[in-house]
Length: 399
Image 1: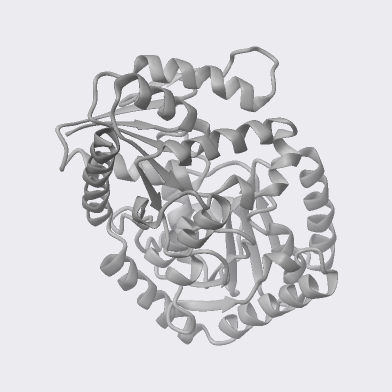
Image 2: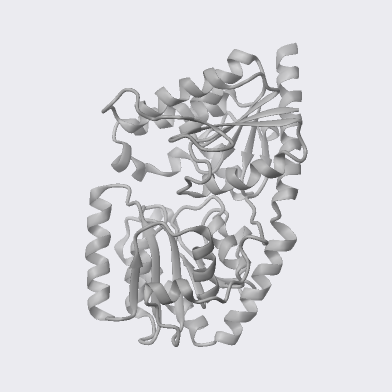
């Protein structure tokens, strides 16, 4: 079986969970297929054919992505299946699948109808991204959901996707890459105190990741608790300004206890930071699964997270961490949101006041990563989906 992977991100240039997913999946897929071609976007890199997002120059980001998509579809060799990740690459997948008459598989890392705040980032391009995604799901011979919770989300957004076309293949983690690292050179360089409970966040400054809620919740953390944010790449100037104001207020209230690293750290540095954390905080308001939680758990760190999307399929409440209920439908209710932030702070304080319990949860979390989320297992399951997609296309062609 010859496979072509279409993706915007590919190592070493990764900024989100979909990029991590593809970067980990491809080497494992090569164990179970005849060949794996990778078509990605951005500057040239080893192991993939990269296409610049510079056409047409000066256009909306979604339109520039379409230019790269056409180049990707033209560059793909003869293959047996096309696998497209996120709307950024799905148009290329649609065109290449039709051109070569081979099955199309799409992975639901997230869904545009569930992320209306993307209008802030893409403006009219959001209508384009939504159209691309909808068309991809109409044409796909198989849809991979990265969590069981995503099945309902997919069918709520796209009721025309039959259940038999949806296959659950969860995200994974490499426990040999993400493992406890008790060195302190990264923490020393960042100037992080190491004699107090440490809470860590890793992610982008977006509505989806809920970082603003964590910053507000942190005003209720116990006085000695230190908060470290590895957070950059705000979606819009407005989001950046909102976060900057909230962070400045928190920093004034808790001098010497709040740290913000804006540049993207190497993965080995993130591993050390995760290991040092007593609590990993994930306040997402939308999360199909949440690879960052797996990365923290693999480093033996307890997680406090919002109970949205696929997060409860990763973080076992009371075993590998603590979950905080959140209803996205109430995002406009200021009192509800304030109560969520207060509850989040309470859960963090619960663990920072009982570090032995937090350590026990961390060890349970790493074992769960090893038992349930290996990339080799995920690659085997993905190949099974490719076979199902081929069968679906053959049946469709026979009608």
